[in-house]
Image (cartoon, rainbow, N blue to C red; front, side, top):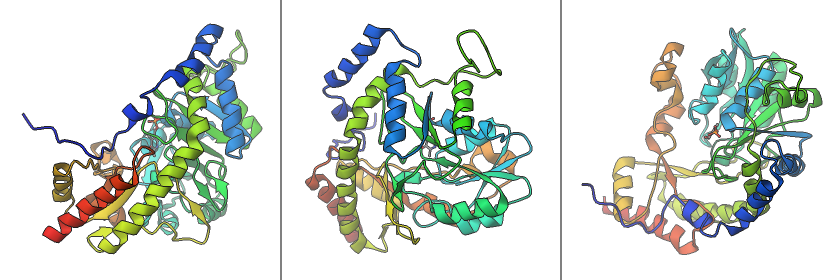
Length: 377
Ligand SMILES: Cc1ncc(COP(=O)(O)O)c(C=O)c1O
């Protein structure tokens, strides 16, 4: 049997976050006492607070982040015969949500900061392109101004994939407020996380929001009348009650992670070219990322991961196989070499522990361990 490493700096942190669950239980108990388990008070309050915080007119709670993207695309009329361009380095759900509508996922290459490259988007637009789905990957905002320009020029919808980016800002505005709609995820490993699945759609269009509210709830106008057939993708009221506690803590979580990210940047930049810290300011707009993940590009990654294990440092890869090279994407006809930046990064990216329970010495220890690896070689 493989020996389990003695972890010193772990990637996972949920055991710490929920070590004292009492404050969450308190809100959950209120739901139980009221018995309003579906689309209840806590769910509605969470939607209102979410919309206010992120500067949008409407927030619609749904079952998960994938449904948020899928329902937003579907409500925009995206379907069979259409193409939607997204980033091939994302979590598979970005493409999955497109495919679920019956449309064809298409891709464009990414930049050093892991977000979709507007110049590459232009090259991949066809007469069938109906929408763009830029991903604010790792919590780093996609370059929205040029993307908005492209969408305007070609008359395309935009749905922002903000699953990893609650609280990230682009030019002083929160992501999720730039496009026709945006989808957020509250998966346990997201920066605003729940005890299970959950998601949110944001939009500034009232009619569109009303349609989405019907779509997530069987098309029910009221208890007895159905406007159109649909499914069920409601944000669980119990989860929304838990989320309300997390929401109060979000600014603190973001601030802490930003502190550690800056320290990582400072300690790792001198290790270039063995370790490459992405340039997160390739554009003119000011950027405030949130660090859902902290990803650098490294030489000899697999050996480094093994070495870090011996040091008790848990490092992961998000994501080693680009979406266009997955078996699921075979029918789309892409081949290796189609998106060279994304493919090179897939071989080099490394996700280091970044969470609000780290201490300064943890970050220093991780960086010292990485430096030791390259000095030994
Ligand atoms: C970029 C991205 N898009 C979409 C999703 C889908 O969210 P969910 O897991 O809540 O369905 C995720 C997260 O898992 C994600 O990271």
